[in-house]
Length: 107
Image 1 (cartoon, one colour):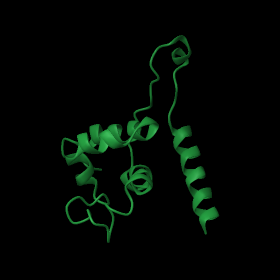
Image 2: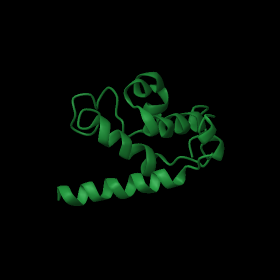
Image 3: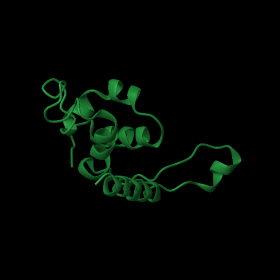
Image 4: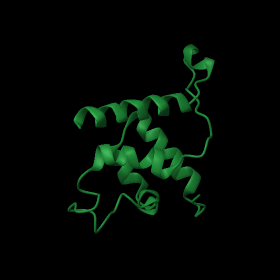
C-alpha cells in the first residue's frame, strides 16, 4: 500500500513538473517563468496540502474545524500563513492558484 501511494506521488509530481514550462533565459540567470494554465484545486493544490498538512487540517484532525484545507476558500483566505509553510515548486503552484482565484472567481 505504501508503495502504491509513493508511486502515485511520483507520477503526480512528474506530471506537475511537466505542466510548467521553463524559459530558455533561465540558464542565463534570468528568473524561471511558468505557464499561466489554470490551477485545479482538487488535482494540483489538494495533493500538496495532503502531503504537508495531514492529518491536522483534514477530516478528523485537530485543526479541521477552524481551518479545513479541503476547501479552496480556506487556502485563498489564509494565503500568508499557508505560503509561509509551503516552499519551492509547491509554493509556486499555491501562489498561482491563489492569484487566479482571490477575486472571487473560483472555477
